[in-house]
Image 1 (cartoon, rainbow, N blue to C red):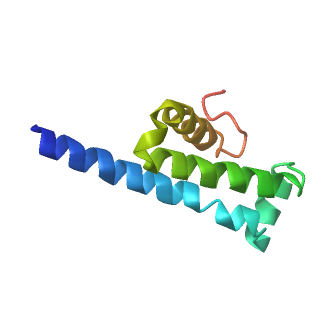
Image 2 (cartoon, helix red, strand yellow; image 1 turned 180 degrees about the vertical axis):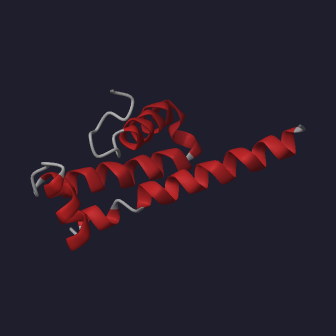
Image 3 (cartoon, one colour; image 1 turned 45 degrees about the horizontal axis):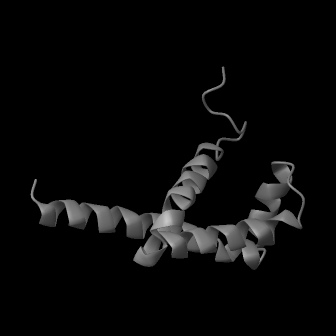
Length: 94
């Protein structure tokens, strides 16, 4: 693979991950379906806008090259959150 292909793959995956993060706007707006899911997971309603804000800030952090120092933390947050999407919270637990 040459540098051009690597850059294309990097920016494509980064944009897809940023779109997932920008979907945090739905948490901020407290969409009814998300409120029901969060309640079924046992999360309080006041936690939703905070999660949405953190997702949006993480997506912006991933997209802005000047914030390289914070990108690692943003990627970790998205990976950690993605691992907790399982209904039990820990899909690797027996």
